[in-house]
Image (tube, rainbow, N blue to C red; front, side):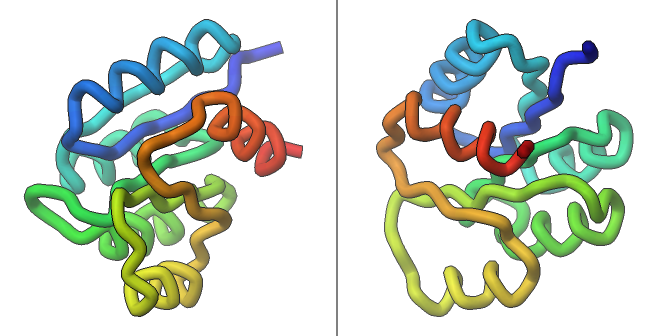
Length: 120
């Protein structure tokens, strides 16, 4: 069985590396992007099963990346991630099809549980 592919779009290198290593240990193929533009490019080329998108990126909003992801790869599940809850942004993400939401700092076990739930 092919490994499920996860794409993490976040510019916080330390957090991304920690999640990437944990998910790889759990058997996932993990790709990373530190900008929205790179994340959108990887959605097209990799066709991930799940994309984790930070709400605030250096070159784009997470909402823009979410919209592009849903347009280019409609079956891909999306997880919006942020260090602070902005209800307006959360509502906008929901309106644009986000599948779930995780708040930083992460419990890595919870991250895996959410991904497994989305992939059922």
